[in-house]
Amino acid sequence: MKSIHVTTPGTAEVVEADAPVPQPGEALLRVRFAGICGSDIQTFRGTQPFASYPRVPGHEFSAEIIEINGDCDRFAPGDVVTGVPYFQDGTCYSCRRGLINACEHNETMGVHRDGSFQELITMPLERLHRADGVDPRDLALVEPFSIGYHAVRRAEVAEGERVLVIGAGAIGLLTMLSALTRGAQVWVADVVPSRLEVAESMGARGSFDLSTVSIPDAVEAATEGDGFDVVCEATGLPVSFTNAIEAAAFGARLVLIGNGTREVTFNQSVLIKKELDVFGSRNSRDVFGTLIDLLERGVVDVSPLRTKVVPFTGARSALEAAAGGASEDIKVLIEFPPTS
Ligand SMILES: [Zn+2]
Image (cartoon, rainbow, N blue to C red):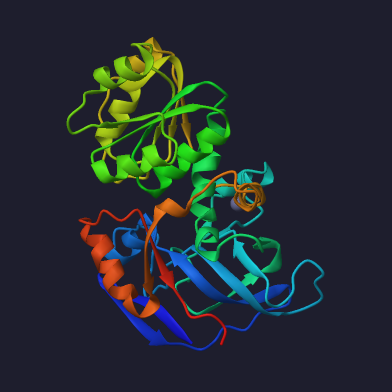
């Protein structure tokens, strides 16, 4: 089978690899679509602190079940599935309290272990979710959707609340969609106009291009100066963190989703003065089924996010383009051939 290896930082190759063999309780999957995520780009660039090389990136995927090792009445060969890509140890203090998404020894596919940028993978059956009625391209977006959904759940976004999402990449836009499913009014901020257009087409109440609009002006325009009830930070940039604090209403919740490597300087007294609740949000847990149900019922449409599909033979140049940072693409999917 073909497998996309990041052999060393900055170098990706399509190589021939042995097909994996499913262990008891596992399924052999033929990957159909795999999304390129920021963490895959970090693995490719060599800025992912947990990655070792060579590494197969990828943790967002849809796939077809080829073979099941063992008895199973939930799945059968031919089923189209996606899977939860975060492997927890099950024994640490986080896991013992049910916080498996924040396992102290979490291993995410594509980062700590090989991922989904290959034709065949194996997965434990309990990690799989079937989605017969969902376009397999949309199904590959369930994992990033789960990140946004977990974040709005962390912040307990409620009906009628005014929410600002900073960052209109895939995670920001999926956070927006998640807040919309809870009945919130959502504004989106970014510095790329084309992304803001997508945000508005997908249901944002309004958007702000922060290259031309100040935070106080955005707060005035959206909330008549009150400030936002919830601010979701989905860029990982220091300036976005301080913008989030500035945009937050007194008594607001701030939820941090974007990972960053740069340090941020701020006066902690502003958290006290505004009495802000600040939440970190890591991975997701127990939401794949909910999101697949939303997609199957057509409650949400994630299709505008997948702005490009490339064949796996073009994965290397897609990774290079994404790492270059100049792209206006929101989510690039790598397509693998179906079972012939
Ligand atoms: Zn654990």
